[in-house]
Length: 502
Image 1 (tube, helix red, strand yellow):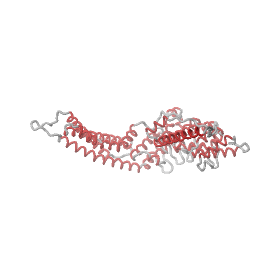
Image 2 (cartoon, helix red, strand yellow):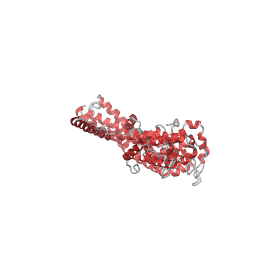
Image 3 (tube, rainbow, N blue to C red):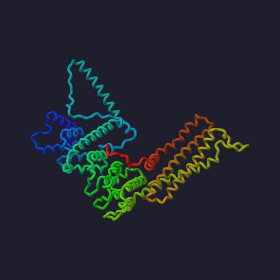
Image 4 (tube, one colour):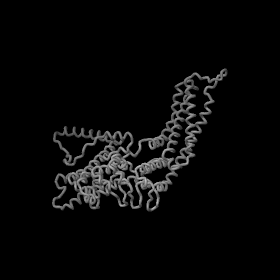
């Protein structure tokens, strides 16, 4: 009841007291009641996040991991539902990831007694001095905790603590499952748990389960879809990589996926043509990159299926995988085309403006020309050379970016164009546009130095202000450029070197 109402401190206190009195498992109850009550406490402890109690329970009562609670749910199924407790489902920034990896979490033990308050005896002066020191120490600890909370260190510590407890609890449950028979797996909802973990993309859970019992790879859901059909359907690349790995290819496990159909007559390539989980797809920024990722999925699955499966038609719609992909991604392709054209049109205006300015600047020499020779007055100064070189570079780079964006605007926009051609055009266009803006600012800075006769006291602040547009452009457009480069030319999400282990 304490756990159900979220009273964690009360639940931990009562659990400690129960352990001290050796009354955790009353001997007068029958085995079925004990397992039922133990599973109820077990599942509640998992859902509420008190995994230290769950760890202690599975060590004392291993059989409760496959028992059913009062809601006919087993602890293993509850653990498969905790998608936010696994490391693979946690997204951290660069610095938080570094801090997270450096943290060391001590093991949690509930077998010891609770911490007691020690009341010391002594004279009043010593007692007052100790109270004063305790107050100072408490204030110091409070300030330290406040600083840690401000930088998010405490949150990261608690997060890693939950992750470590989850992995340890999962290891204990896998040991219990490896010693159980198939009937116990069925009664304990082990099959339902691994199917649910696959849908949620919990790679640690699925990988550890298959590592301990590879027979679970044959499990199917109510629609006759196996684990890897579900992994493709819900776009979980880490689980799909288990199938795609070299170990699975060598062990001929891939043979069992050829020709396997669900109740609708869909094979695993049909799964790649469906969009069952829009939220998963929407995590990718930009409709064009979403379309590119969907094409990458389809091409990766296409490599491993039997050639005849590529032309297999399903029962309900009588579509081949390619036809099903085109039908389901029609709106996404239109949104991707719209996004590409709007971005290219906006950047074309900027690029054309820079081309015009840089062309005009070429014939407008700062400082003027000499009347006798007609040559620029500051021809022999280094700043003039920098001015001319940067002006020429800005002109050529902006011209290149305009041509790239025009290529995007006049593209045919077929499905395969989103895989590499359009992202490549956008990458070149954005990169050259950024370089043209940077060289334009260099041209501006060198012109200032020429006109002001290299008076640094005045020119340096103006040059620094000239760098603001470059920084703003980089800040706004760099995330798009980075995502496109990684998605198009970065490491593939489908890793054949991934092993069947954590």
